[in-house]
Length: 87
Image (cartoon, rainbow, N blue to C red; front, side):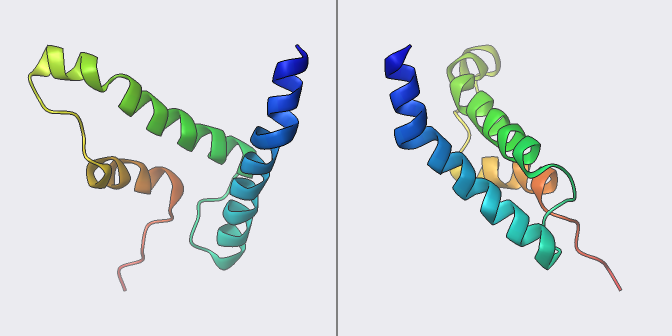
């Protein structure tokens, strides 16, 4: 639709391209896992989005409170960041 095209051109494309630039720069620096930066970006967004969108269900099923930002960061860190070498 025209509205979606406007949203894509006005916000989404810039947000994705910015995230991909950060991922590429971090890959060149050696801190982010190798792979297609777009797939890493969307994988990261999917993982984070799923955790937060399913938090109410998780709370009902497990009785556990919704995850904190720190818990989510700890969970997604290995997905995106290369493991530090233990010399």
